[in-house]
Length: 162
Image (cartoon, rainbow, N blue to C red; front, side, top):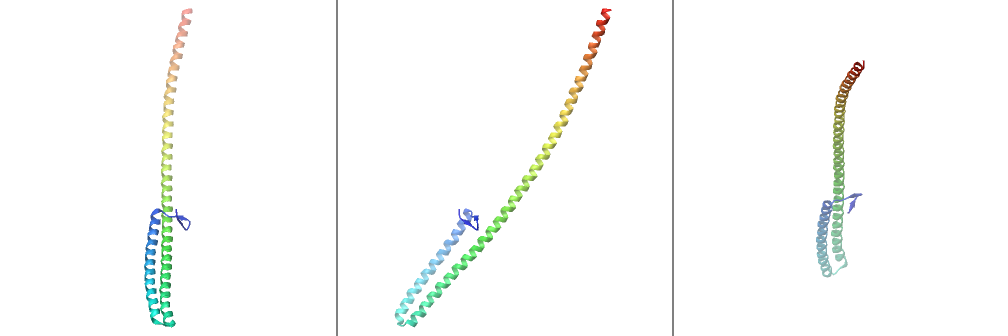
C-alpha cells in the first residue's frame, strides 16, 4: 500500500488521490495543448513578423503561460498535500478515540464480569456451607441415635447376663 507521512492510505483514500491526480493530469494536458496551440500561432507570427525582436516578444508570452501553468500545478500539489495531512490527522484522532472507547468498554465489561463472578462465588460458598451444616447435623443425629441404640443393647446384654 502507498504511504503518506508514514501512514498507510486506505483504498478509498488512494482512489480519491488517484482521481485528483487524474484531474490534474487532464488539466495539464489541456494546458499543454493550449500552449502548443499558442506556440504554433507564435511560430507562425514569428515567421510572419520577420524580426527577431517580434519573435522574442512572442516567445516570452509562451514562457509566461508555461510558468503560470507550473505555478498553478505547484499550488494544486501544495493544497492537495495540506488536505491529505489534515485528513490523516483527523483519521488518526478518530482512530485513537475509537481505540480508547473500545478499551474503556472492555474494562467496564471485565469489571462487571469479575463482580458477577465474585458474587457467584460467595453464593456458592454460602450454599456449600449450608449443605455442610445440614450433613453435619444429620450425621450428629444419626451418631447420637446409634450411640443410644448401642447403649440400650449393652444395657440389655448386661441385664441378661445378670
